[in-house]
Length: 384
Image (cartoon, rainbow, N blue to C red; front, side):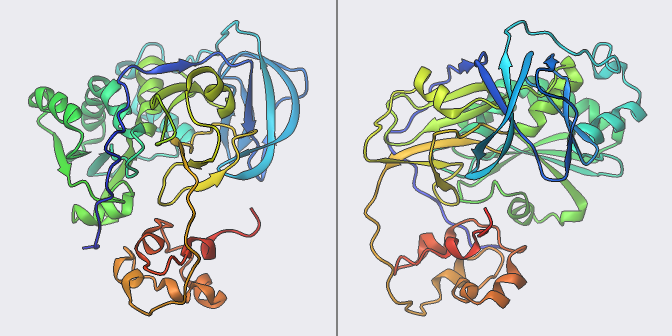
């Protein structure tokens, strides 16, 4: 069992349950992955759901209706790459998938298998345990929690239906002990779904990581499939409502934000547009961190695009971080590492290469270090 710690939550941070919506941006920007094929050209007219990129056999579709304007450099998760720029025409035309006439109740299993594999790289055959991971690790972030809060009835319906189709032996919904609203909602409904179990996990950092969560539950990786609540939102939207992947929730919070909020946005929206329209925050002497105080990266918000892997933007005061001091060889970083890596040895290129796939980039080693050594920098990709 890993040694995990509790990260103190900000005492004055409270996100409203009223979801803000920014789903009609003037432009969206869709990243072009490496080794992918463009399916459209400049000035092409698109509908919502039009395939625009083929990435390893998986189509990436347009989240809006509009026209292709250009290819331009933008960045997401602090990585600069090429993006397709699409201008919104606000007509909301949609490509309807004829495979799903109404909802999951009309789909044959072989069609369902194909949809899950093509859109989500999921194979539910021969799976015995499904775990719905609704855990946010960062004390400023509530994205996974809110996906469950807003969609729990549909999640339960779909999980129950999938269990009957694929013969799951058990389904576990994991929620943090601090998320009392979700716990209460699920407790009221779970009597109708005897094959679904609620597991209330302690408020410990990095249980939101799939591998760490499975270890905490004492379930071998090969015996269970973990699905994030955010990913299950897109699955349920497709199977229950025949809706394409066009939007997502993000948390915008931090001690420099006066109105911490959950915002529903179109994929490909510039984060600066959301901030300018909805968020009141201190813009001077602050820094912007994506996804996590512990493991996230400081970013510039200019030309930062909201992609599927962006869960939160945290705006916090700039801190005068004490300079790194000489290592004391105290062993705290080694003791706290969930996967047994020795962070002190990461300076060695040979050792780094041996462990870089094993490292979870959780940031615990830097967090615990009494001499302020930033171990995270040793794991950064110099090519990014």
